Length: 399
Ligand SMILES: *[C@@H]1O[C@H](CO)[C@@H](O)[C@H](O)[C@H]1NC(C)=O
Ligand SMILES: *[C@@H]1O[C@H](CO)[C@@H](O)[C@H](O)[C@H]1NC(C)=O
Ligand SMILES: *[C@@H]1O[C@H](CO)[C@@H](O)[C@H](O)[C@H]1NC(C)=O
Ligand SMILES: *[C@@H]1O[C@H](CO)[C@@H](O)[C@H](O)[C@H]1NC(C)=O
Ligand SMILES: *[C@@H]1O[C@H](CO)[C@@H](O)[C@H](O)[C@H]1NC(C)=O
Ligand SMILES: *[C@@H]1O[C@H](CO)[C@@H](O)[C@H](O)[C@H]1NC(C)=O
Ligand SMILES: *[C@@H]1O[C@H](CO)[C@@H](O)[C@H](O)[C@H]1NC(C)=O
Image 1: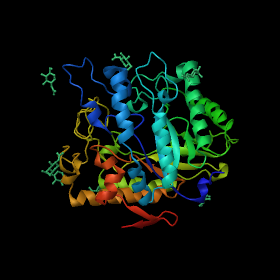
Image 2: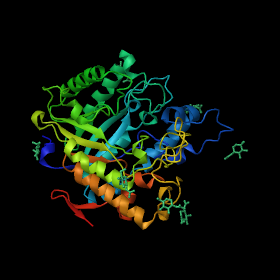
Image 3: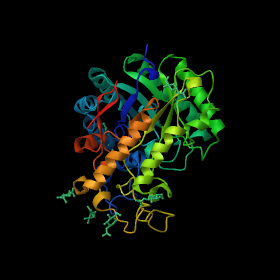
Image 4: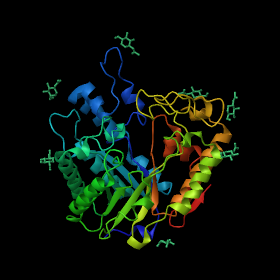
């Protein structure tokens, strides 16, 4: 029997960019390509795999799966007070067709990670992060295309097949896998909520047909958890609502100054609360310390940024002051960060921990990156702008 979410606060990090690669988490994988020798530069795992071919993709990704996350990382996370990890995985690890460029072979590495999590004492959320046809069109779904997912029953069947296989893993690792996210960030701009809800109900039934107590985690489709109060199925049991909070993928929020960013977090404590009446807890499944979008490839490979005004459809710089450049505090080189900026990062992360601690819990995005300091939990703790929890049961922050 898995422990109830209400018994303690989930304090987690995402193990993102491992089993579903993302350009901004490991840019070096994408920087190997040369525009004069590659007809179209890869922007996601689909086009990365298509450019390299299956054999070379498998060779490079096997090495990536083997080395990008290690047992040492999990030991560090646990020693900093982290008690859960969220592991994003694409459908192709479970259900691949011959005509798709992706490769599989992730599962032995996923299972090794589950064994390490057990040894270190971490609980796990398995997160289906990419669905066939793409559920949102973002590179983080594995394929940056016009989303097609819900337009075809075959895509839905394959999504459910992936979830069935994830649940088989949860049944086998029932002391480790506490949650299954049925789908990351499906697009409500593309499909009506009612269609997404119908899929959620179907997926819920598939998982519940196999186990009663694994948490079924559902994403709020950026509608905000409270909007779901009237949508959730009253018969659902052991469900957690997942919401993602970023304050820089938005033309307005990126113009906010430091104080406004922190105030917006503090104000949320009034707005986001667990659904006590239906026993549904809310988790912030993704957030970071970033308040700018200067980070290399953060808006996707080959795109500009709002900060300096170089992104498509943004015609002027949107940073909150006059001299908008991606240098110094806003560079990817944390050794250039000012004391003032590091102090801000710390206040911003503390504000988030403190508000999200009042919910069922949270997962920082991401455990590690190659060169995105505000997105890198392990770096943030080492450099001092992310506080450790001395004793997570008591929620004491060690300074
Ligand atoms: C890309 O390839 C061209 C042609 O082989 C070569 O001249 C150029 O130096 C390469 N550029 C980089 C950045 O490797
Ligand atoms: C891929 O690897 C397989 C098995 O090692 C080999 O038979 C095949 O020729 C390789 N394909 C290419 C295009 O190199
Ligand atoms: C993928 O899912 C479909 C739909 O359930 C199923 O027919 C097919 O056999 C699955 N493919 C694999 C490789 O498991
Ligand atoms: C930050 O922005 C808020 C809201 O726009 C404004 O009231 C405040 O004066 C600003 N603070 C600074 C230090 O610029
Ligand atoms: C909801 O339940 C939690 C934990 O059981 C409790 O701390 C909190 O005060 C409750 N909130 C409301 C609004 O009832
Ligand atoms: C640029 O803006 C920052 C933040 O407001 C400020 O601290 C810095 O002094 C400015 N630099 C220049 C050269 O104006
Ligand atoms: C980061 O900045 C430091 C100090 O300015 C510099 O010595 C170092 O070479 C930079 N690192 C990278 C990877 O650019």
